[in-house]
Image (cartoon, rainbow, N blue to C red):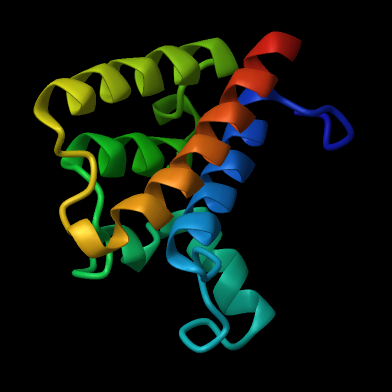
Length: 130
């Protein structure tokens, strides 16, 4: 791999990290839990963001699984392209519209829904480039 080349799955990893930050208000691996650069780098290489498993995460399991796939430390487990990510997000959105279960707490619904809209727009933008 050439470190100067941007690979689609690397961009999707960054998108996943951005989604976590947008939805949780914290980076995937916060300084409080990963105080050193070494700890943070190791977490990115082998870990999964704890927020996705926490009670503070008020997303459907499908949305959690989607974001977890984006931030998988194993590139082969991430979507292959922005188009694949977009198609997955569209399936989640369709399912959630039918079940009205994307967000589990009404008090957070509008706030989190607006963040998800921004996230979806980001993925659509990425798909249009790639």
